[in-house]
Length: 340
Image 1 (tube, rainbow, N blue to C red):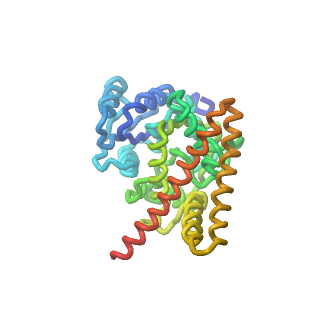
Image 2 (cartoon, rainbow, N blue to C red; image 1 turned 45 degrees about the horizontal axis):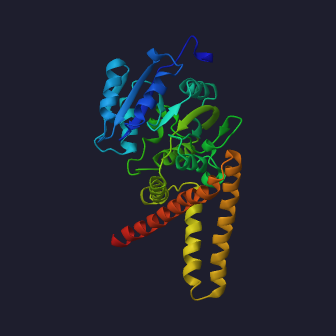
Image 3 (cartoon, rainbow, N blue to C red; image 1 turned 30 degrees about the vertical axis):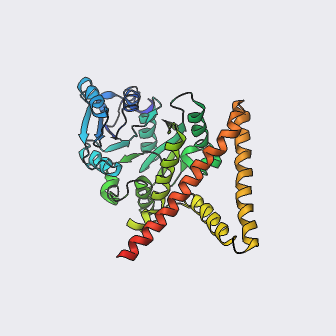
């Protein structure tokens, strides 16, 4: 427990939850197993109108552990849950956790230790993606979200070896006073609200740190169809922030859009101009070669040839889903602006 052996600041843990009956118990068990003093914790689980058994599971835990409290989020979406939790938090340090994840037992103590020691405004760690089951499709999705070709240079998904200043972190451990300074989460953003808030925090000269010793275990989608649809939504919400705020996300969030747009333009114009058709073939061929290269490495590392055939499909679900989602986001924003 390091600096908290004698004195531990009180902390409020905020966990949004919507239809997470398969994972919320794992998440709460993970929080209960933290090495942080339980008398210094309150756990606020914000139920977003779940239609499954999530609420009943949370109520079972709240009856057994008085410091676990169930709050309701009738508007369902994540930013409303974050803000409900922050407004109801009794303590001056807030740790945001996801219901679809598990946490290393020193997660909270490492977060708070880093926050205090380095006088940071927000602290987070690395996201280790693990399979929810042993099926190869699920494991291929896990590999995709753990691979540079799948996620780019996202710091919280990379294996860093030192505490690093970053633009955003997964979840986050905040000084509550920060929200008084820069405002709460933007409730217009169904997704990307954490990135947008951290961009505001950076503009206000806030310090955001990633400590690789702080570890979250994330369970991704287990079916390619669900993974593809999830990436479409992520792609849409990489564009929608332009509709609500003036601050864009980082370049890495727009690379799939650039890729898809280049294919659409060269593919269409290639019908009329042979040179552009060859550009289209070059782009798609180069993508396939790179995809096969990373797929072969994954197959070799796992000693399973099936990955060589499955990973290109999984990478395509990631890249094409995100790219087409972003493209649809642009068309939707353009349509909205024209209707005004």
